[in-house]
Image (tube, rainbow, N blue to C red; front, side):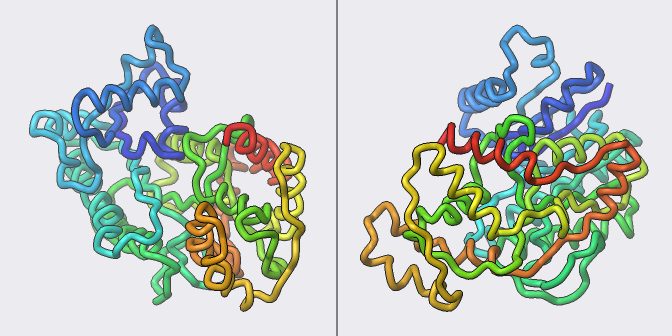
Length: 372
């Protein structure tokens, strides 16, 4: 029996991983979930089972065990008995838990990213010492590039760099901790760096509408009164959540991925251009009966002043959107790309090919417009 320990099961990536794991009848999964009480834990677990479409009578539910804890705490905040059991028979660790808030104070962001990484590595060391550990999957982000321009390689990044926000900086610091565990302690870890995760390529489902969907609102013009900066040839790297989950689960069963960094992303060629995405989004919003303002392109430096110029005139429901606009526009301004040659080569070995964005973006956007 393979016994997995998964953090972040309620997040976009973790929630897509669980169905893949329990599809194997020889796999059980312990899920670390935050909860205020045992009753709260039970409610959260039931909500997740509903998302996974697991009926109470489904035998797969017996192979899922929710644990009340916190990935940022030593021993995950578990009681002594629960942690002892976890450290005695776990064979695989998948660490997806992360706070995606970009503007947290740095010390709080570090507690989330670095603290959870240290807790995962402590468990991995104990399991390795008793001969139980088979593999660790550590989910990072291409955001560790920060403001570094050009193509990010699937390698450790040693150069000094600035970051857009504390989320990126803390994730980069967490990677540094993991690197030591790989290179000096030889723990069997694969580092996964997803780009912007969006809905399932087949049906658009995702447990939470996060950053990409806010950017969709910006590109539709509804958050900016129809005003846009000039995008030029800038692209937005996105990846469907089902492809991210498939890579992580498959890597957990492939010792050949130990010590590797995989960029789970579309890459510089397959990523959609912002200018094309804007046109497609505006058309999609109109088809779904949304009122879209007429579009105007203005100089980028003038667009950057939009929150200050229009925030005090805007209706209250738009003020918050305008206040967070600069944070998101940072991402849309960068001329960055992410090399994914190792990931694509690994897919090719398994006779898989990453789909083109044009095949799944209409499905993903349609799902968002239907459900939001």
